[in-house]
Length: 330
Image (cartoon, rainbow, N blue to C red):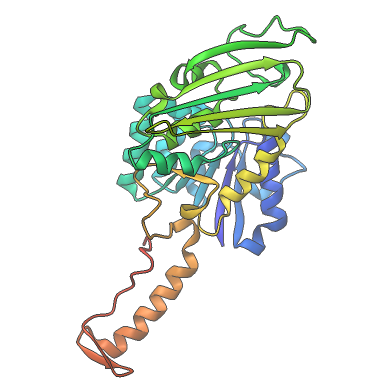
């Protein structure tokens, strides 16, 4: 079983924990443990043996993937340590607007042979943006997020004076690098886009957040992609959401699919750092336990017959026998 860790027990964390406990076994997924800043919130909802009180002691429990759905501060404080023991899914990619942290996490992923994942979340067309970026054809990217003012969690007093019925108000427009510290819990969709658009990065991708009292039932995410020779694509995504909800309801299932996927490295619900190319034929350790067992079994069988020499198998002379389908992490 693939042992997953959920760090954070807000609405999204609760959803993921419930799905793993209910449906995880059918997908070869189990819950290693759950951590929340306030452990009292977990009592009676999560089995006691699955509650971790001190996050710094996470390495004492075996796990394959850590899913952070808490706050960018957790990514900054524990991200490098997480990667030294496990694959890491960054549910608060706004933390990656810190260029120094961004670089260190990438380097740690390479050093320890781990994978950094950024779930697509509410971003529509993330992999298309990434493919356009990888081809060198991405020229500009703009994202506008519009929500009811009760759905924003902003630093400072930018929106402290809102009143019901005031209508539309542009709160900020600028680079995603500038937006992330202002609204760390609200612009993860933009941060995911900045990861996909690696050539533009957080400083090159432009964003806008809009408060609109009319939007009492959903969030709106508009994405405008510009390519060469007049090419452009514009998408508008309406994500159902209750008043005060930071995360739209459709995003929950998107996170679940990011965690599952047929193989997370090829899932349309995940965006990957440049260190993990989408066209690479590899199965990440998150979902390769079965393949590891199959690989070892077949290797033993083949070694008995081949003894690393030329042989005739079903009338075909093979100079060597290798597995080209999967580069399995050991």
